[in-house]
Length: 316
Image (cartoon, rainbow, N blue to C red; front, top):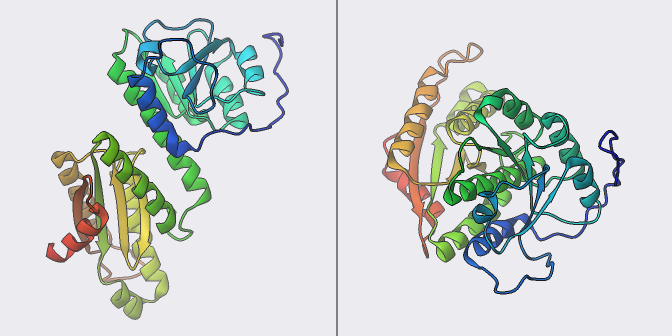
């Protein structure tokens, strides 16, 4: 093994791994399945590598008995990553033998695996630096987190990484959000998860009104600026784990992790507020007008189509 004082040289050979869209199902299985005998290593089984010198006793129950779990200090962990695949990297801020942000940058440069950071609340600044360096989620560990809290942190890390991967490879060049094809793939996967696990998602659609009239009166650049502002407002109004896309014809869509009514009202209020304040100096008299609708993602239903139909019932 390399000395802890040395920075290992890494050869970026990515081993075959299951698609990210299967990872959440694997974690669900890990949480519900407890094998009677120790299983042989299987690339189809969810796996995690804890980067640190010890394993928090509350972490294995949170990851589930069906999860393959290994622990290694930083210098050993990067060597393991040269030959082994892991679906999740867990970096322990207190026992990692490197500055945390430096460790995250090294791991991120070599792997796009989701990274979950464990840290006490006293290391808030360290957490912020690690998130900037490429960590996907954090979990404060002042007291033993519940199994449910660990599961949510893992799923958020997976969702954030999958959305960042999509955003790097499949975006609308004008809007800076997911393309229609990428959104449709993600939407169909969430529909399947809702059917299998009963998870609740919500589709929110936003129609930018008068796009053709704006283009005729002010030109195509004004219409593009209008759409870009609406896309940015929607992206800012939702969470980082919510997918946002431009579907064309002035239509934006967001796939929300839940369907809390208060949150939906807050998102709509924020969007209408930003629309009311949109007064570009370059185009006097130009206004941004929106219609907003939503529908829950339920088994057997097409929430995107339902939300789109609901737009016709909303006042302009």
